[in-house]
Length: 112
Image (cartoon, rainbow, N blue to C red; front, side):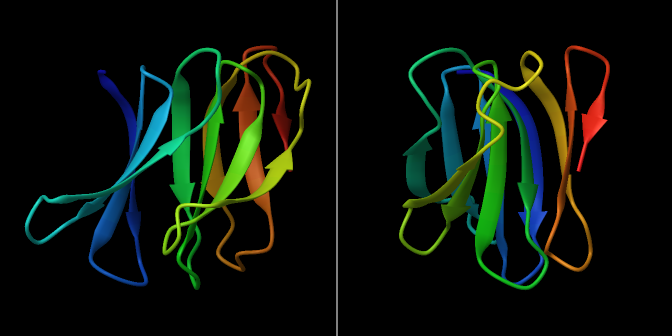
């Protein structure tokens, strides 16, 4: 599906994309090779992705209002945050410390 978001992983030469088909994909930045596909959820698209600064992890947020944290080495979901969020998650950023995520939602609010 169409790519809705992209984030570069600063710990290695990879990037993460979110797509309208509800999937999060991990790519090799040097070759463009698809390395892994992760399924964000059963409903809706992935609107936002963000990479963590010091570990091989990424966050995804989507139409289901859920933020998921992924281990990029294994493709496994590590955590699920903000279930029942104030509408779809539209934007994400991981703070430089790597300990907090800022998310924007359709209800017009940001949450840390």
